[in-house]
Image (cartoon, rainbow, N blue to C red; front, side, top):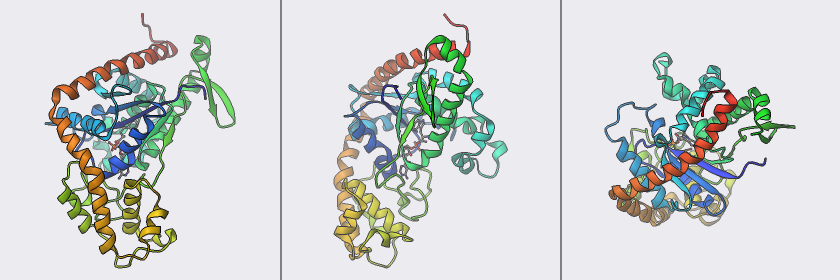
Length: 354
Ligand code: TYM
């Protein structure tokens, strides 16, 4: 692929960020800054699909931005902005709505979960959510997207949309000379959009609830004990880990021994991610020990790693002028890139402009 390597990812401004968001996404965003150009976006338009009327959308948007900055994202070197400032996302999403098929959207497990039984009554926005997500990524022709495991299916759909667009418009892309070689299986085609690679790796791609190791840690879980929020203080973090569900056995002496023990596996994965090591190394240190020994060690590590982030987050969140300035400047840089893509897209599709 000859597309310039570029990282894009997004986080919704709904509810508090939790340990899953931090380990599955934010920490990876930070790590990629040294090797890649990165664009990180607070996807405020996406949050309208969950709740249309928010009392505090602007503040939630600032809070997520503050979390990005507190985690160590550098808004001078990279681009940080909120989605709605760059209307080209919504414009490309409309074109993708006409590329993607309803059947593709109906198959999305997140749509099925969120729409529940009464699918006919779900908003059209919720159904089309992955199309806007594809537009977020492809309006920059981004090549790599760091996310948690729950976004895997959406990223496969992003590739399907890019492939169909490249195919449907191959003649126009060739005539206009705006294509790049894109590998599609065995063959290489002249395409306009890259087939984006998801980056889903490490010990914490799917952090589970502290109350039930078979369910994902989630913003929408009614029990606050199920998750560690980035805004929790040291006492809350320690209390939640102490109360975390476990089984009565000590930790196993090898990785295979975690099979069928989802709560133990989750806590070991969290420890490994926070300590920047592997599950195997954690088992090497704690194998055979009781949870009564492991949990205080985990709580201490979690407080050590998260307390500085949450303190910095509180400080930055309070400084509206600074946060808004970062988003405004990032939005201008993002819009320039997005508009360059859209000029070509409008030509490819045949929309009259200029
Ligand atoms: P969102 O806001 O639900 O979550 C933000 C990021 O956190 C990851 N994540 C987790 N990782 C590990 N364990 C968990 N329990 C856990 N819960 C959440 C998510 O995988 C995600 O990486 N659709 C996206 C937002 C989005 C986006 C995009 C992402 C919109 N456009 C373009 C990438 C590229 C979402 O709702 O993430």
